[in-house]
Length: 281
Image (cartoon, rainbow, N blue to C red):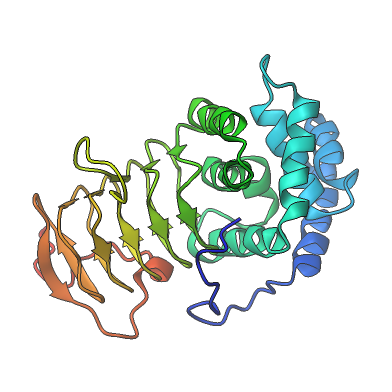
C-alpha cells in the first residue's frame, strides 16, 4: 500500500519485537488479562481479538466496528479492510511497526491492546492504508468513502492518495489534515492539529514531503510542495512555507531555523518539544 516509500530499518533498535507473530501473541495475552479486569467489556475484547486468527483479522474487525455505517454496513467494511490487508504483503509489518511506535513514544501506552481498541491516531492510520489500497485499485469512490468516515469518526482527514511509511505515530489525531500529494517517510511523529497542505488552488504535486525521523509538533502547518529534512523538528504552531534543512528546529510564523540538532538526535523518537535554546519560561 505504500510501495513508493522504501522501507528502511528503524532509526534505532527497540527492546520490543517487531515480528508480527510476537506482537500478536502479546496482544492476545493482554486481551486475556483484560477479560478478568473488566468483565463488562469482555464481549468486545473477545470478538475483536480472541475470536480472530491474526492481527489483520483483528484490525479489520475493529475498524469495521468503528467505521461501518448506514452506507456501508460493518460486515462489508470488515471484508473490505481484510481484503486490503491480505492483498498487501507488507500490511502486517506496517501495522506492527505503527503499534511499536506508539508503545515506544507515548508514555500513556502500556500495552498494545489500548491503541488497537481506542487510539484514534492508530485507527485513522490503519484505515487510511485501506483507503490507499482502494485508491490504487482504481476504486476512488469507495476510497473517498473510507476517507470521509475516517474524518467523521476520528477527526483526522488523510487523502487516500497520500503516501505514508511505517513506524508513524499520529498522537491524538484530532485536527490532523494530510493532503493528496503528501509523502511521509518512516519513523515520523505527528501531533494533533498538524496540517500538511497546499498553499492555494494550484494543481499537481502541491503538498509537503516529510523525511524520516521528523517531529511535527502541535498545530504545525507545513504548506506547499516543500521538504522537511530528515531528523528535523517543527515547533508547535509554526507555519512552514520553505524547505527545512535536515537536523534543524524551526519555529515561528513564518517559521525560521532556531537551532541545529546533533546528527544523532532523533526528535520523532524522543518527542522532545524544546527548541535547544531560548525556550522561554
